[in-house]
Image (cartoon, rainbow, N blue to C red; front, side, top):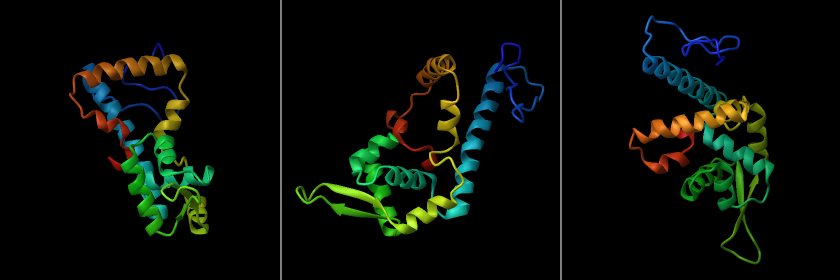
Length: 174
């Protein structure tokens, strides 16, 4: 948003929010959240239609492709999700024939994840970004904007009484 734009207007092509005559700032911000959530949802729906996998699975595939031999704990860290969530993703990707799990020779409990050829083929068909559109959009913002947004969202979260575990649930699974 620019200093001269109203809270209901975003800068950039195609990013204006429909003005429905409501000057209530809370209603305007709610509409902005709806637009953000819709953009995220639309991207993940496109991914699922194109390749038949959910967004979190696609993201996991891309991490495994970029870091062959990564373990489940490393995958959880790279995706900023809980280890049980990463384990469930791995199980579904193994069942789908997209990755394989290899046991480390010295420690049979340790596993290494590797993309199979079908996983590579699938990733080539995915409309990016693999992690979803929101992480890339956030990274494109200047540090000052992110700091303001972080503080403002923390204040909002303080009014919601949320489940703190939700912070580690991929958006694609919400």
